[in-house]
Image (cartoon, rainbow over all chains, first blue to last red; front, side):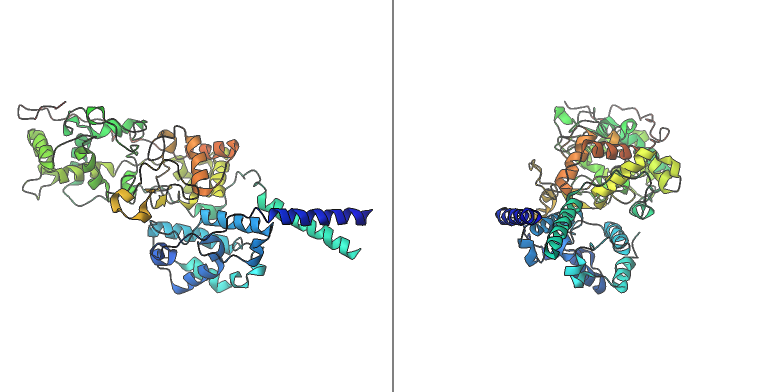
Length: 149
Length: 349
C-alpha cells in the first residue's frame, strides 16, 4: 500500500516538474553600463571589488551566472526569486547617482550582513565555493570606506 | 525501504525550502537591533552657511525676502505661498499655483531640512539652496519675474532693502542683486531644521519611540526601504530610478533626463527625504499620491517588487510619524517688510 502511494507521489512529482518546465521564470541579465557600476562609481579598493565580484555577483548585479539547475523547476523559481529580490534590494550594477555617503551607508549594511553570516545565504554557499567568505574578505568589506562622514 | 525514506526525506526537504523561501516574515519585534541603526544618523544641529557678510544680517534679510510677494510679477506670490513655513514647508497641493493660476509640473518639496540635501529640486538641477532660491523667481509659471534686473529694480526701489543688502554684503559695491537675494534666502533656510523624536531615539533615548513605532521601523527595514532612505535625512543623498523593479506608469516627466539629456537619466529622480513625510502629502514628484499609506505601498511595489499587507503599510506609516519634527516657531515668524515707494514697480496681472 505504502509502496503504491509512493509510486503515485513520485509519478505526480515527475508530471508536475515536467509541466512546470513550460512556465520558466524570467532569467535575464539586463545590459550593464560600465560607467554605472559599483566599481566605476565608488572606486572601491581591489579586495572589495574582488569579494563583491565573487560572492555577491549572482544575486546583486546584472551579471548573474545562471547555474544549470536554475533551468529546472522548482530550483528555477527559487533562483529567479532570489535574483529578483537581490537586485531590487542592492544592485552593484546600478551605482550611478549614489553619493559617497550613500555608498558608505550601503557598505555598512553589507558589512553587518556578512559579519553575522546572513550573506551570502547558507544555501547558496555549498554550490558556490568562491562565495564562502574568509575572515580577510569580511575585514576588507567592513574596512572600506573609512574616509566618508 | 531505504529508498522510500530517501524519497520522503527529499519531499520534506523540498517543501521546507519552498515554505522558507516563500513564507512571510513573522511579526516584527518591538526592539531594534543596534546594527540596523548604523544606517541612520541624527539630524545635524547646525548647517554651515555659505560665504557672505554677517550671518545674522543675512538671515534677517533672507527671512524678509522669503515672505515678500513683491518678488513676483503679480506681487501676490512669495516663497511662502508654496513652501509654507507654518505647514511643514509645503502647500499640500499636488502641484503649486503660480503666475496667472498656472500650475507647476512637479510637487513642491518641503523647504525644511532641504539645505542638507545633496542637491536641490526633484532633478538636482541646483546644487544648493542659495542657487535653488533664485529658480522660482525666474520661472514663468511660478513667480515669473522677467530678469535678474527686474528683481534688483524692485529691491532697489525700497531704501530699507538697499540698507539690508549693504549690511549683509558689506564688501560689495552693488550688493542688491539676484545672486545675493538667493544667498540671503539660502542662509535663512539653512536654519530650517526640524529635529524629531527619531533623533532623540538615535541619541540614546530608547523611550522616545513607542513600541509600535519601533516595530514599524523593523518593518521599514525588513522591507528594504533603508536601501534608499538612510542617513540623517532618510533620503536626499542619492538619485534613483522611479520604477526600479516595475516600470512606473506615468512617464510624462522623465526626471533628471531633462537636465542631463542622457538616456541613463530617464525617470531618475532625487530620492526625497522622509523627514516630516507624514505632514507633506500629497506625494511623489507628480503629487498624484494622496495618502502616506498609498505612497508606502507604491514605493514597495515599484522600487522593491514587494506587495505589502495593510498591516505592514500601517506599521511603516506609524514609524514615519516619529520623523515629524518641531517647527522653529519663533525663527519663522513673518517679519515686517519694507514699505513700497512710488518707485516700486506695479504688479502685473
